[in-house]
Amino acid sequence: MSDARRTAHLVDLDNRRPELSQRLFETLGEMQAVQPVAWSDASGGFWALLKHADIVAASSDWEAFTVTEGIMIPPTGKSMPVIPAELDPPRHGGFRKLVLPHFTPRALSPWHEDIRRIVADGLKPIVDQGRGDVVTDFARPVPVLIICLVLGIDSDWNRIHDLGEEFMAAFADTAHPERGKAAAHRLEAFLGEEIAARRGEPVTDLLGLFVNAEVDGAPITDTEALGLVQLLVVAGHGTTVDAIGTMVHRLIVEQGLRDRLVADRALVPRMIDECLRLHAPVWNMARTVRNPTQVRGVDLLPGEKVMLAFGAGNHDPEKFADPFTFDLDRAGLSQHLTFGSGRHRCLGEGLARLEMQTVLDVLLDELSPLELDGDVVWGGHTNSHGLRSLPVRLVPDHG
Ligand code: HEM
Image (cartoon, rainbow, N blue to C red; front, side):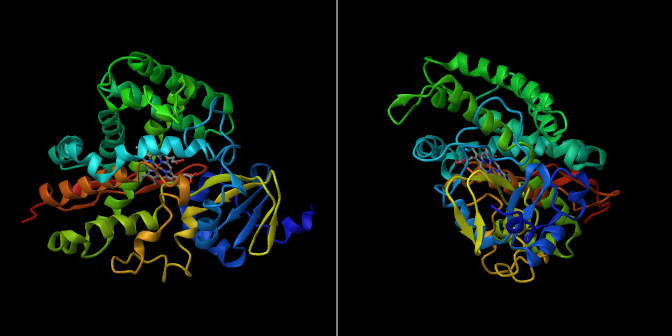
């Protein structure tokens, strides 16, 4: 238990620093080259796994790395476990079995038309005015509207959008954990009403199905239902906004890309994956060492926090040649870690991909090309990264 064990791997990585988002992936890449298993003294201290292979291995080793002590660095002020993200086996498996079948591409196909309508309506102000901000005017409400649609929450999406925003903003404010707690309570109160309205009632929507389901032969408790629904609402919110923003940005700035996609629409899934690889909206998640283990010969001891730096793994030159270059033709481009890896891999991946695909479809089918109309603004907080502003205008007189 020596400090030497840590100081030999010391890096200056404090994920609470706002300025980190300006050169996030470059900074992580530089650290990865010198300290693939890095120690940071920030936030009470943590190990950062920066190599693709190490992140994949740790993600599948739940006996050495537990999620039950929290999955954020620094810890959040929330009042109950996030389900299923903070459950280890065997409980974790039962919840995945319940949720996953409803988020496969096939299960989501009945929503295609509605999702296209939400996206097209969302873009209308930019079309009408000929300019606007892709992030703030268009992308922000889209994922909330869509998850509410899929779950069956149609009462007041505006309120849930504001509560979700407040919740995420409060988490970003790590200096005031009480703010995060208060925001979590407000979101919980709203979702609690939605759950209570469905408890014991005939199932009419997906939320009702979850609330009245059994996991491992026992009914879901109110706390579990709340933890699950809260994660479904919040996990796809800022993440998908960030994914849409950076994808549209790439479509604009990459020479010849739009024409190539128009000529060959089969490239769209590759476009989505390469954008996700280069700009992971969730660039890290945390684990806690449960049993002593080693990574690349470094001892990791029980109780120590571990950051799985997905965004660094996506830029690992041993996995992706020339990792900072956008390359639609690269081999293995879907093996990025943007949706995590192993048993906690994102449950909403199918929905996020569908939203991104729909945005591209509408942009390519219905809009003239876009061009930048001012400076873009990058931002993020402890584990998120994306554009905070993407001002655009429609290219005039496009034939
Ligand atoms: C581009 C958008 C998204 C990104 C980048 C993303 C990223 C991630 C990542 C990295 C994880 C793994 C966490 C870990 O290993 O600790 C995760 C888990 C999860 N995500 Fe997403 N996510 C996105 C969209 C969504 C959406 C739309 C939903 C809701 C429908 C969702 C629901 C979840 C859930 C429930 C988990 C927990 C899975 C488990 O613990 O078994 N995500 N996500």
